Image (cartoon, rainbow, N blue to C red; front, side, top):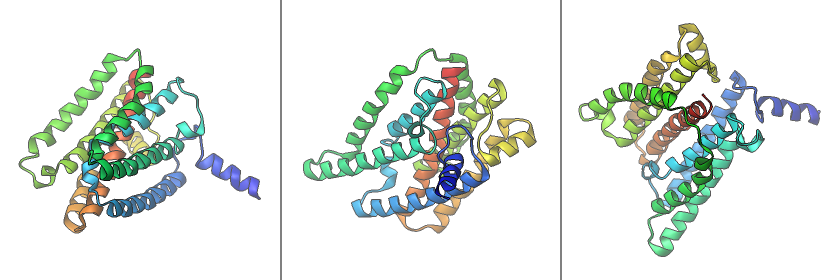
Length: 263
């Protein structure tokens, strides 16, 4: 019985290459929701605004995404701690430990915890950066040109649309457009496949991964609007927005780096 349960978990969750299924997508979503709730409680305890972590988190996101990309291209070994969900657990734990340590040091020394987080995050990224070589410049430009073309619309509208005046809202939508751009270029121009269940179904239905742009825009804008209109608690609202930002930037960076290293 125990061996069957172990095999079921191994095959469906602690996997190396099966991709996403409806089952593990739902389970990972539930786990993510629980983690976000716990992190909200943590922010309330340390009395910090999640919004202030927008920039300090970027090196940690890059660390996790670049590690996964290096695994994709055979530079790092294919082991459980370097693929889903291991890499997310590892990166999350390192980030939380760094945050709590930085806040503690700030209380003792008055050194801004955000700067310390950035320093630690950048140091973590150095080995991965050194392993990134032979970049495909064409793929790189394709991603950033498509991202810039669509993102420019929202950047122009930021001073005319209240929803986008909040830098966290704008950052969240730009992060997801970056993810959409990386998916579009990888799938339509380089023969990659979409791993997630719903995007894969819509891509197959539309015959192009360009469908990711309207999908991302609709879902993210609605989510941000609901948060702004119905969630009054600042910590909860900003943590949810930060989570949305991470869920866009992390896969976007992973996809982009996997493509430009391996294309």
